[in-house]
Length: 149
Length: 90
View (cartoon, each protein chain N blue to C red):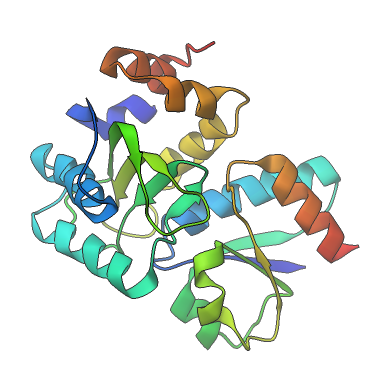
């Protein structure tokens, strides 16, 4: 179940963010807060963003921030920062308002989580419903109960 | 046929890309093995795939590899994946 990978408080909605980098940092920090990763993981993701560019902006308006498996990862997890005012990342998929983050301690433990995530996000109307949602409870309903218009 | 789904770390974007490429290939009725790999693995492998899928930002880093490289803008758009795979494979 996708819900089992999100810690409590791991879906946050807010008005905006000073920059894409700040938004990524905040989203990954939610993984720190829920005990999925150690604080170092935030730096690892920001370093990856610096070196490789915004390649993890993988769909219009959506980023999936992550870094390689490392000692900083405690268990597979996901988090989401949703901005009402999207930010620019430099990707063709700009502007970005859904900043997901994820982590895995190795190359296997998160495959079920991402398989489910890919399947859900490819379902018609899910992306639009998420992009239009502003309440944390509405987003949780879409992600965990597949209730959307 | 072997297809690589590539991302920087080989565990996030590439896994999503693999998952949806398999779905798109099934819809097209094309049989292929899709493997999620990191950029280093894609560049350093002896067994090169025929086709490599990646997000546009990584194309520069994949320049020169002996495979057909396809940029996917929206990983969750099965229609885009299907059309690009079909155009390359047929």
